[in-house]
Length: 102
Image (tube, rainbow, N blue to C red; front, side, top):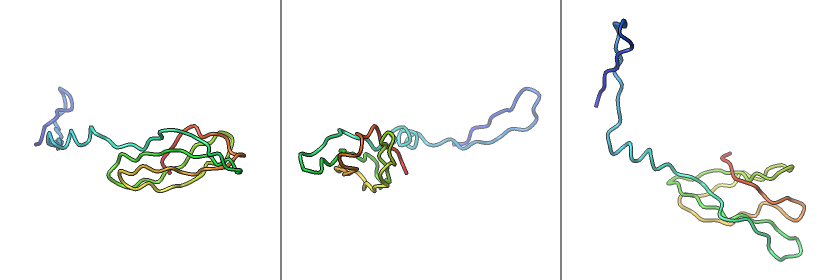
């Protein structure tokens, strides 16, 4: 579907803009996301730090873990529609505060 947009009352030029079909708009509205479900430490001698990650996208994503005052571990690859536990450090690492795309 094409829409014509007039660029002002005095403008003599109009632009043709292709608007997406209704089905395409709903696909754009349901954007995917990679989220963390929880931060935890195991009871081992090394006191490893873990995060539970969920990829809600239909494509694989590369993410990094945001750790305050420490080099951020990653990138980790999370496959499409996957839940995964990521090991991102040990006792010397602080608890992570978020995820971001690398």
